[in-house]
Image (tube, rainbow, N blue to C red):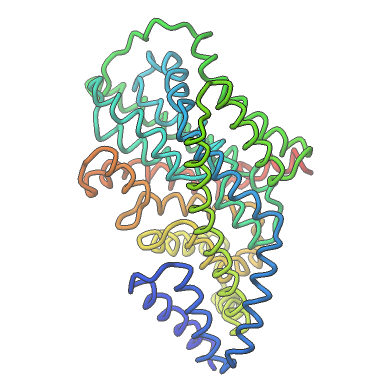
Length: 434
């Protein structure tokens, strides 16, 4: 069957099943099965053998063990007062800066992202503290919500990142190098956000009331930051020093979080069980999507869709930046309808080959892809961060989306900068791992 027709059949099936409200992993399994039957006339027995091999390979993947462990870390931190300590610790450092406590959204999300790995968890955890407090103190609601929508998405970029682990497994690249590559772009985006907040509030002081601080010294604030900073040092230090793989570091992080919760007298049997069950539910969802996506990738490989798409793009004689611009638009459109994990697992079999053939580093493309997924977290109608903030603030989804627009554009600027200067993403992994 013609490659274009094969690809069109797969696209129609994806839209059909997802549009019907079918679960994502079920949709992917059905698309793969129907594609193999309609396009290649595979018998059900052969399809079952293929799926069985993929299930065994996925179940025995050591790299995927990091996903439930990092999710469990985030679940435990979400249920303790470590996030409240984080807010108290940051406050004295930003109180007198133009923009005041709005900067806690950016700084808090950046720090929490380094132990969470989830955008929704970062937004919800920081948001449940700052949205109420900033509103009570008279800060501009739109700027507060928008900064949190943008900064909360950093949970996908700043390591440890669940999406980066998924990309590393699917693209067969080093997850440790991916984690290192996400650090400087993440800090760059955070700096762009804080700079915008500071400049806007300097021009319009009414957006942020003047803060005189809460009388607490910087030493006391630093002690409040100590728990989360210690977790960051332990987890990322183990990975970047080469002492542990990401999966081993995730296990150390879980043990460290349990120890911190005990020392802070937060650890209870209810917290332990609730966090574990939350991690199991989320991990089951993520891993089932991964298995289904691996099946879809294999099915598309049998149908030669990725190879033919790569050949078609090569025949168009696009320049490197033209290809990236087309992919950026493609990912923004996907972000209107799909969550980040689904975008990654569904698109990678098609997009990775042309990008690598064009000479781009797959580690750099991993960072680019995560940034584009983060943009999708801020685009309606399926922007997860927007829904989280709507639930926290009670504001209509359209107002939340409008508030997030400047930070969407700033992240777009960050994408442009790492595309023009790829060393922003590649310098640290090259320095650490050669």
